[in-house]
Image 1: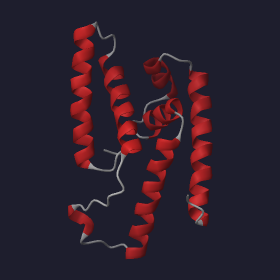
Image 2: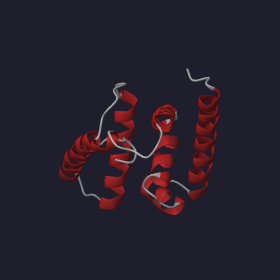
Image 3: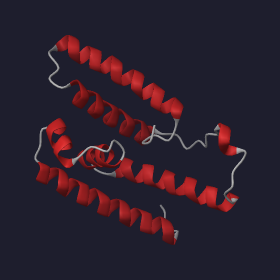
Image 4: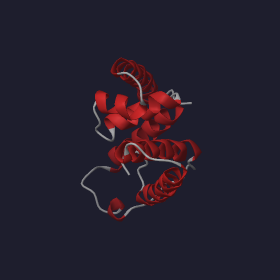
Length: 145
């Protein structure tokens, strides 16, 4: 939900994840269920972001807010820009970024889940963070593409 920004999309992705995990279980033994589910959820969420439509969804709290309309619009645009930026990262960087910043996994946990080294995770997180900061700086300047 934190990655996709929509309860409905998160529910759809979770169903896809469980179906895919069940198929993987039938095909062979699963070594780490938590790792498999986190990875599948991350991958499918990123896939959904890449395919996303540009539709503004309304939620129950959209009608009442203490924030100024301008602040809400800017926050929504910033969130959309961040989601778009994550979708544009190379696959491995976006997976690691989402696992670290949205799923609150440590570098060691990510390395174990993805079968890589902690150093590789740190490098990918640094590069992904730098790319996203560049994109968000362009957003702040109004240079969005």
